[in-house]
Image: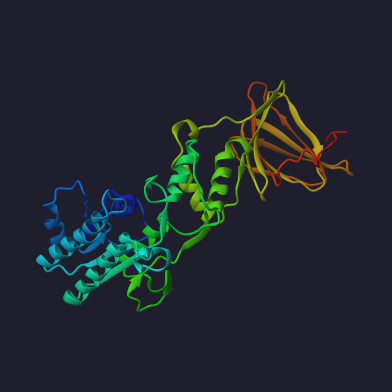
Length: 401
C-alpha cells in the first residue's frame, strides 16, 4: 500500500510517519496483515510538483495539512480549504479514488465557545468540500474532528496548552492559568495514530456530533477516536508539578494503563532539557557500605540499592507487617532469616551470577552477609511500603543469638 501524508512535518504527521515507517521496516509486528509500501511525505517545503506524482500513485491519503496560527485570518481559509481543494483536484486529475482522510477539528461544529470561530469555519468548509468530493467521485472519505491534542513533538506556545505547560514546567519557565476549573477534552497522539492506522485497515470509528460531543454511530458521516480524556487545567498543572518534583521526592505517581496520568507523564518527559535528564540520588554511606533510595510509589512501596563491603553483615532486624524482596545483582552473599520465636535459621546463598528474589518475611529477623573478601555485594531491595520515620516497623534482633 502506497500512502500519502500531507502535513508530514507537523505534530500529527511526524508521529504518523514514524509509526508507518516502523511498519514498513518490520520494526512493528503488531499489524501483520497490513502491508505498508511507499510512504509519500508532503509538507510546505516539499517540491510542489511532487504532489502530482503522489496523487497518481497513492492508495490512501492522510490529509493532515492545515493552518492553526496564521498571521492573517485569511490564511485560515487558504491553508485549510485551499490546499484541500488542490489535493482533491489532483486526485481527480488522475482518476485516483483512494480513500482520503481529513484532519478537521471539533471547532467545525461552530457550537458554544466555537461559534463564530474563523478557524472553525475554515475547517467546516474543508469538510463540506470532502463530502462533495465523495458524492462526485464515490471515493471513501474519512472526516475526523479532533479535540485538543497532546503528546511528544507537539509544539509549545502554538496551539496546545498541554505542550506549553509541559515545556515551561520542564524548563523552569512561568505558566499562566486564568481559570484552573476550565475543562479540556484531550486526545493523546499515540491513541490518534492507532486510530489512523486502524483506518488504513478499514476499522475506523464513525460518529455523529451532538453539539461538540462525538456519539458513536456505525453509519455516521464523521470519524472519531474513542479514547479521550476530560481534565481541568488545574489538574494538569498539579500533575506536571508533581512530575517536576519527582527527582527530589522520588515519588512516582500511579500510572494505570491507558490513564491520562501515564500519557501526560510520557509527554512531560519528552520536553525535559538535557540538564534534567540525569539527576543525583541521595546516598547514605558509612564504613559498612552504602544505602540509596531509588524510587517511591504512592501505593506499591519503594525501591532501594544496598552496597555491602567485603565481610560486612547488614540487617539484623524484623518487621511486624512490612515485607521486602532482596535481589543480589553483583557479588556473593548469604541471606539468613529466623522466626523471632524460633531457633531455626533458614539460609539462601546468593550471587549476581544467578539473580533471584528472596522474600524477607514478616515476623522473621533477617540479615545479609557479604561472603567475598574482595568484592562489594550489591543488592536491589523492594519494600511494600515507603519508609515512615514516625512508624518504621523495624526492630533490632540478631539472627544468630
